[in-house]
Image (cartoon, rainbow, N blue to C red; front, side):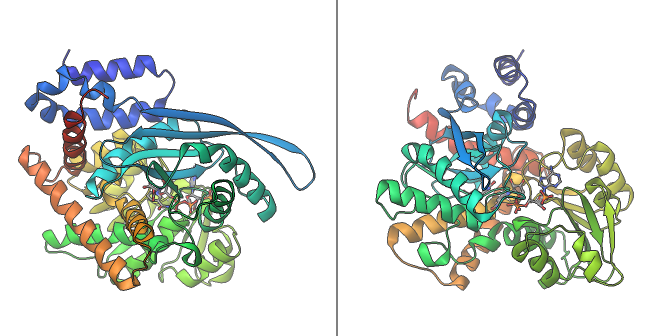
Amino acid sequence: MNYVDRTLKQLIEKNPGESEFHQAATEILTSLTPVIEAHPEYEKAALLERFVEPERTVLFRVPWVDDKGVVHVNKGYRVQFNSAIGPYKGGLRFHPTVNLSVIKFLGLEQILKNSLTGLPIGGGKGGSDFDPKGKSDNEVMRFCQSFMTELYRHIGEDTDVPAGDIGVGGREIGYLFGQYKRIRDAHVGVLTGRGLSYGGSLIRTEATGYGLIYITARALKDRGESLKGKTVVISGSGNVAIYACQKAQSLGAKVVSMSDSDGYIYDKNGIRLDIVKQIKEVRRGRIKEYADEVKGSEYHEGCKGVWTIACDAAFPCATQNEIDEESAKILVKNGVKCVGEGANMPSTLAAIEVFQKAGVLFLPAKAANAGGVATSALEMAQSSGRLFWSAEKVDETLKGIMESIYENVDAAAKRYRLDGNYVAGANIAGFEKVADAMMAQGIV
Ligand code: NDP
Ligand code: 2IT
């Protein structure tokens, strides 16, 4: 058995039941095989065993009291996965499905994604099984304060810098930051995605969605194509989905669908994003309300149905494993030409294979959604420099970063004669820098 397969086998044995972590590790390690074979020194240094083992895992209790006086206890997580190229960096997810496997898959992905940005950020991820849905602002605040009362001792602007992810947006980051500052008495860039009045960066809110469309446009340009006039399907209706829709529309695409975990809307005239924003960002409502407000649009129960809509380009922007083999086959049958992953690991391994075999332009999450964390790193730079960049400067920098990611991933794939295989290209390009930094720093 070769080094990669042995490492994977050990990982599965040592981390039983962590199916999402196994899935991410399988995709990554398998595609790194040609790099590992070209570097026998990695095995002597147990590089892969170290790469897949988090440097530190923090698990904690988060007790809080709801508006009726009832006490609740949630689980808190922070996995500080790899700091070879910079301080741990990665979001916090608040969702009932969060467990150690989910946080570890996200953390592992984050290491390579952050490396791809070209900026000095290591990989980490955290969160809780707390569900912000249906909670009052005061309940969310008390939860965030309790969460930070434990987390503060493990993070810092040069150590570990969390941000948002599913269920953690501007409101939650505000409450988390307020509590950190109060305990530490330090107004520093310890979290990104902060509000503009207290150290945030312009364009961070838009960055993941914008970045997804920038990298897609760059890849299409290489093929003599563009998004103009294309029919687009987007899943989710959260932060990533909304700004992917905005940028795609501004480039002339027709976005005909968005969704949430209950169902999806179809609007043949093109989604009216002002209505979606009103429902999701202002009212914190459900996507089905769109069909009540926009004549001619339809709402369908069940989120998987979104992949049955015929489209040229699909952007999964909700959650992991939302496109399975069956949905991938339907997309291909209906003529999809391009899939860009806004969410983390939204396609199962079998779905990826379907896309690749069909010759679909497939842009994997760690490259395609890196715009969010890249802009977080720009926020860190602004915090350290105690200055504030214009929206134009951040946006231009973000666009440049996404285009370079595409170019580096494309070049890495070609170097190993895997032209157009951006899953392998992204894993290889991301890993090379991390491996180099780990080798240089000795056995740590
Ligand atoms: P939000 O919480 O803003 O939105 C999440 C969206 O996905 C909602 O529409 C939600 O619907 C839907 N969703 C969540 N869970 C499920 C599920 N199990 N099935 C179907 N739909 C679901 O999160 P973000 O937009 O920030 O994150 C979306 C994805 O993008 C995640 O995979 C995240 O890891 C990834 N990402 C986020 C970045 C960021 O900067 N925010 C950066 C890079 C990646 P509902 O309201 O019904 O729950
Ligand atoms: O998955 C991700 O890259 C994020 N949720 C953003 C992380 C960050 O630190 O901005």
